[in-house]
Length: 342
Image 1 (spheres, one colour):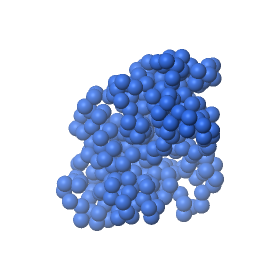
Image 2: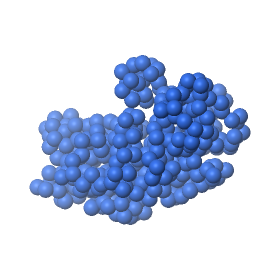
Image 3: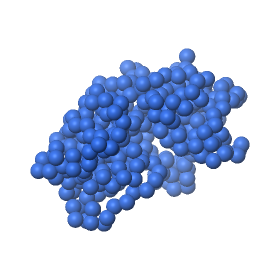
């Protein structure tokens, strides 16, 4: 099979691998859609990788069950099932694993697609059967790929701050995760303030239902948010998706008393004064993707509310276009991309 690997220092190769064979508790997925995620760029620009550290990229998998191991129960997976993958495994015994949060495994997780396990930018993917989540019949493979990481992360972040329909939420960064947060927050009934320095991304946020657009390169976002919120008190909740240190500080300071800010953008620093929290009883939390149950709940929400997750994707690629796709993605010349398979 053909598969995409990152060699570090921005280099990409398409390699030939043997078709995978399932172990007793494993399944083989014939890929139908494999999304591109902003965190892929961290892996792309790592230092040169030794050969033994190179893995197949892609952690937004969606496809059809092609083969099942001898110990896999029919209720867990059978040939032809349309599935997403929760792209982690762990010890399966600790409290985190047993609650569906395998990425937080006390013994250290396996992360499929970019860290220490082979991922979805390939014709086939081998995973443990317990990582599978059935795809709704009316849900596209593209939507399933989005929910499998970027959009699912946004949904989990909104749940982390317990967003209510009568609240105002400010979303910093309108990339794939931020746009998903805007889309879902509107579907939850909230008032959404979308922030980004990119005009194109703010235009997308408007199309996705954002009530107010703010460009922090042109206006002080903290002051602007206070200007449009009741009593000048600030947003009820904030979701920070840019991984920008300045944006993180602004997101905290733009919330009202008892406000909650959730950080989802990975890497970098956050700086704030203790008084930023203490004098307003604010909270800052983090969100690392989602549990298996939350991934399933996100897919249910998409179907029940008719959320157009497919609209997040601006470009579709074949696997052999991986180098071009990631060059465009890295240069922010496209929005969310996806590799599609026949």
